[in-house]
Length: 183
Image (tube, rainbow, N blue to C red; front, side, top):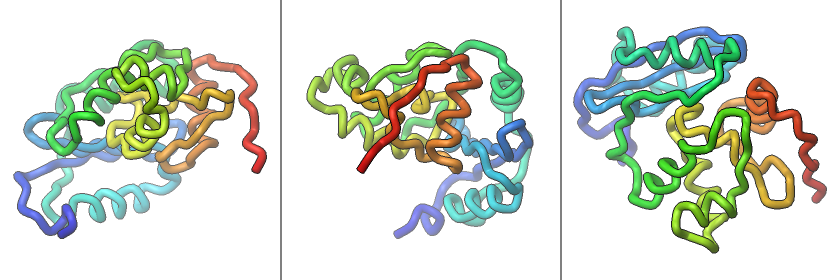
């Protein structure tokens, strides 16, 4: 059964424009359920929200200031983005990985392997990569700051993929030349 066909308490969403495209926040009582970034068109973002959450979501202002924080981030404000997060849909392993990833400072990078060690899973770089590929909280869980041990960017699940990951790192002042993947 898909998520959109299950009963959930009412959820709300906000959509807003930034310099990298349309962004959105979907909230429930406990906090953010999903943060979406980088959509070229507002309609594409709305379709994605309705696909994920069905008709049990309404348009409403987001509380807690996360929209303003995201806009300030895209204007170049340094620091950590924080907001209330609804962790209930995540596995214990995802929670552990995401909480460690949240600590990677603005303007820095970390490898999947080092993140795995810090999460208590020293041989789990692939598992960490899988967890981050399902990150529903882009920017708040800064998975764009995590790269492969060989110096390549790895993946990025937000719309725009690696190009957006590179843009976010550049915005944060990470001007490192990343290796290109040769297959």
